[in-house]
Length: 302
Ligand code: 13P
Ligand code: SF4
Image (cartoon, rainbow, N blue to C red):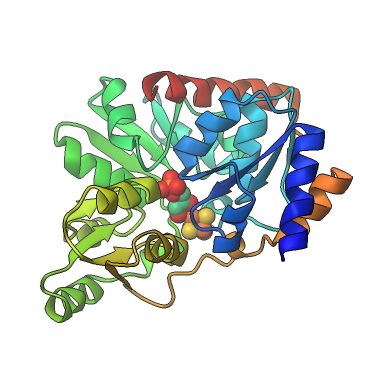
């Protein structure tokens, strides 16, 4: 493995490339990554970087987002089959129909979506800034696609905004039930329960903290508590165990595994960087329209 890591690092330098990795990736990817974090942080890094090549260790919509906001850079997705089940739940025709059903309302688009869908929306959001983004619209009603769970979580936090949601979800997070959380509370009464807002709202509301992958990691960093139940994908629990060996982390279920996120390997990163394959390309009209949606978010979330 050391040889593989050295070759990737050498190529990064030679080609002026960086590697962005999501916190759900296989943990060894961190050994070559320049930045590891949640989708907001990684999109900010994609925008800021002076590198000529971005290798995205994540899923398709993340690499596509990097290309939308940094069209002059070459963006590579080492495993081109790494999709997102939620992003695939809405396409261009479906967003157009949804808007027709509820005309004249601002449309918020969760970043877990395709460029075509973003191109039809007013502003993008991630799990870490969704509440602030909806608030920034100053509208009593908004449309929210594709994650119904995140949209309803935002609605419950804002009280005076009606969030009309499209019926998409992340099957990995949506699987978690109230019973799962109640059982964890009974079994680990002293643990803090940290939940990603892609879980159902009735599940999220039972957490001691609700936040993005980076939000959950930061909560642990700033907490004096020593036991935590992690209610998001396994990659977050793996990184917390590595970084805080003196604390205890319990993953809510062994099914908290995003198969797409686990597809990328160090070998594929090396291959894509060496041969510059699996490049993300976009129709320029769609790119420009979806860029507006993302740029607007980045302005609110500086
Ligand atoms: P974050 O924005 O917290 O990184 O979440 C992305 C994601 O896909 C969660 O399932
Ligand atoms: Fe998509 Fe769910 Fe995987 Fe996140 S965990 S990338 S929302 S399928």
